[in-house]
Image (cartoon, rainbow, N blue to C red; front, side, top):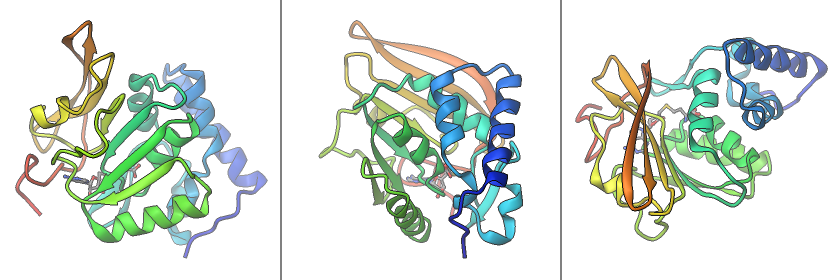
Length: 221
Ligand code: SAH
């Protein structure tokens, strides 16, 4: 059961969460606005909704987690989304990150390997009215040829490496891949950008994501 009512209380809690993220030094106003719009507690079971506005990751079942709000904010801002951008998210999870991308008016395609999570997220995003999000069940490490190229690809699980499969699906005019790369305990947030026909690589802080599995991910369950 979920509580799909956004009250003064939850709106207030959300504003405080956004202010907390701003105080951490994050100033992308468009992304902060999107975070302020989306009721994060919709993505939690009712029993846990009191945790929805803490700046923390939280279990969503199947040993997976909804990402920490400040991480969602940071990954989103690295993509510099413009309205109409075609974005591929790998790792739908709860669907929260997809809703933030949708608030920025992107055309969002999100893929989740665990069917039960994909179905839950897809249902919720539909109920919330996001017509610009499409959900898929499958292994996002495989090429998505029918939809490529993408203006942005966002990986929300820990990747062992940056694969050609992902880079080859980027729009070669300024396409961006944001991906946490490392081992199973710690990853470096990495951005690959197509710049005048060349690939530019930038590295940001350290994070801890759940593993990216699948053909070109970690071979664990
Ligand atoms: N973006 C999510 C956080 C997801 S956690 C949110 O906002 O809630 C990472 C998710 O990636 C998990 O749900 C996991 O099942 C999924 N995942 C792992 N490997 C994957 C793969 N190869 N393809 C698609 N999804 C994958």
